Image (tube, rainbow, N blue to C red; front, side, top):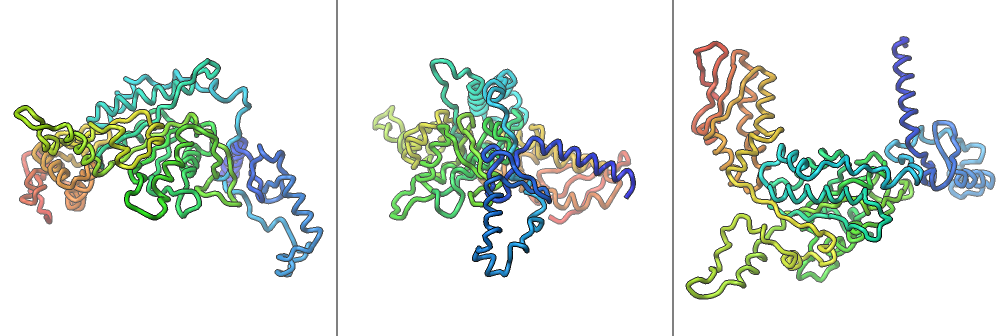
Length: 470
């Protein structure tokens, strides 16, 4: 091995040792952290064992009457600690907590959180439309992190700003939360409510939500306690109607989430989503964790229309019963009573004080989604062809045709990517064959299957039509 390789290995070891100093040791046998069992005993192969487990191990070896050891023909002299694993998985190491006088609210600078108008301006670069939703989430997040830096010694306490987002599929609920977490540089855990069940049944329990947040924070408890948890598909845990079986994934999950939303100390596994004897546990306080719940709530519009139609009357100036049938933004008129009728329990809704709806994407909004955001889908394809020194252009009529196709699929902005992948397949396949191609223009006829894209060669004044399979 060369001197350069030796130097590289030494640098890696030093960096590893420096990084390891930030984490607690975990007992190899009982999986408890050093903060709970005291100083660890280090044995060969980089294994740490607490004093209690070490004493129990010696007692078992000295007695020699362990039935499992006798059954396998193992004697005390044959037992060797070097046969254990080489190292504890790094994912199951906890970051050391700071002393109490250095941690907590004093360590958080609320001035580092941008003001609501700055948060919304940053969201505008990535999210098209949804002005009310962006304003509501900007104010709620700003107030939430001001609350974390609030002096708790005062006479009163500020409550949490948990949120409920309602909107049709593909309108940008998840993307809005992802963008927000990146802007604030805080850990984010995204989970589906469909996987949650009541404790004791097959599936994840509600505490697995906090475990995912702890993983996203790099097993740093203090960082996780200021993170964001987004629970998607929240409408799937509504109370089941007309059922005689136990509702283990409906109302009982809502009841289990109450303590998390309100704020409590939760024992969560480290590096796993389920508790077992081989996984260490740690305590996470959810008081300063921001919870955002989102869902499409299918058929909620029928409940809203039924409520609004009760106000209709007879006469020349009366409201017609079909007045709201063609309203694309009927979800904007949702109330807490509508969600209770849908199946959400009052205690759950009471812990989500901020509720707002997102608009369904129109044709004009879809066209803007295609080309205006910083990471717009068209810009991604243009960048891919730019690497082959080819310019990609879209006619205005072509963008309208793509938006019309997306509306027909009724899956919101998600349909745009699928449509563009289908349109660009033959072009991305044929373009690298000819190095003389300089520009490709997508037309409406090509999108509708009636023609081919326009291809311009690098030599000025000449044009060529690329024959592609439609």
